[in-house]
Image (cartoon, rainbow, N blue to C red; front, side, top):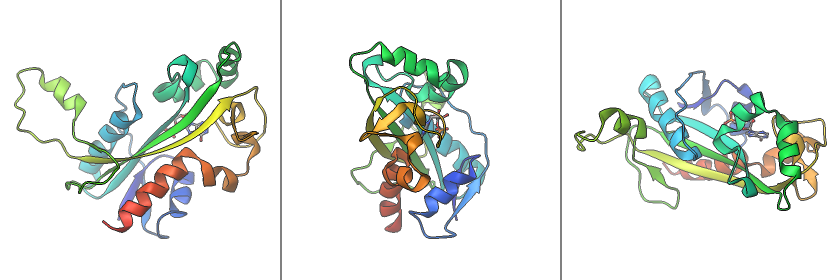
Length: 208
Ligand code: IMP
């Protein structure tokens, strides 16, 4: 059984739109979120930890909103920034910018303890936390668990808040003239970063 590591049952319902019904179950496991300015290593570390705990195939996702003219801020820190600054103030920051292009990104990390065949989607083979803990004298023979990564991306623009739906940065993220908060769940899922990552994963997973 495939386990989706999340505290949010809504993500399971979304995943079931791409995977066979009943083929994915929620695993409520609080993995350590490492610090990185990229989503991939964070999700990969979580997937390794969750696989070691579950002993079954797992997926872990990490997502965020990236403002281009702010070097990708808040990016992997989106959740922290939402809780501290708040989404309205991210809009205030961005409103000073001439270039307000942004994107939502999601990286889905899959680990089942086995190696992977080549495919366009990358494999994370470096356990940064273990490497840092081991220090420079470490024995390099210890292979970390490989983790396959699937990235979903949706381009857009930061705008003044509009719309009542969604969550997080949805009211200030506009795609094709509509904010994510103005879309219903079905519309948003059809184009969202998580949906795109799930679609890539599901296609690959079907042949695994
Ligand atoms: P998570 O990785 O799904 O927990 O997302 C991290 C943070 O990114 C969340 O706390 C939200 O602030 C933001 N985020 C991720 N996906 C979305 C989205 O689809 N809409 C709005 N905010 C999002």
